[in-house]
Length: 297
Image 1 (cartoon, helix red, strand yellow):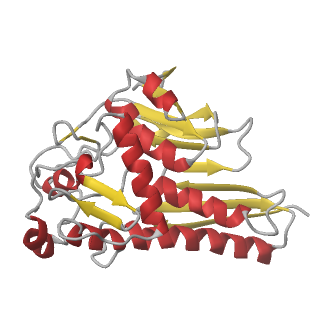
Image 2 (cartoon, rainbow, N blue to C red):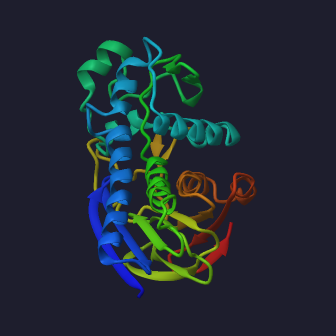
């Protein structure tokens, strides 16, 4: 008999929904959902900027003065981030944390230790993604930088949740969807759709066809609030200007993995004219205007 289970938990700074459908018992579905949430929680604990005890915080504190050994999740996320940074000539850059701190979008929880070790305290430093060196031994910074993985870690966490469910002995025939605040993966995505909020009316949505198993969307849905610097608060940062970008459109990128979809939405949002770059990195992008009109990037 086909059973369904839907669960939701606050994680990754958003709400994460796990929906599973399979010819399994309710207890089996519950166990699978626990596996999915455990995988997401592991990523949350390792890669979170807000927790001064996370692995990311340790890297931010120490990597400018020594090589820091890293876990497999940290290594995989950094490898992907640096690959996309290189391909985009720095348009994707995980060293935008000082700008986010300055405008109040990220907390300055690490101020004392970071000031003493790297000299960075919510201000733009001289470094960028090229200052991050990842070797077999670990990661080090060649210049004082702060990294934030908020533009890529959610997608990675979704992928890990999917893998944790589909690699087990009960995986055959499972239909699972994981949605972390719009970073979404469907194991059975063909002929299905995803609801995407309208850029100027987030309470309304438009159904778009799924073009791949994973999709992520970036927009300035809630950028009307004012940050600590008195400016409109958008978390979309242009690393070339070290400044927030506020646009009236949204972009959605479909890909084979959610980590790629998540990261590529930032490129698509900052430079929607370059659909070829998105495609070269394994994504297919759509842009939606205020009227709900959708076009290919």
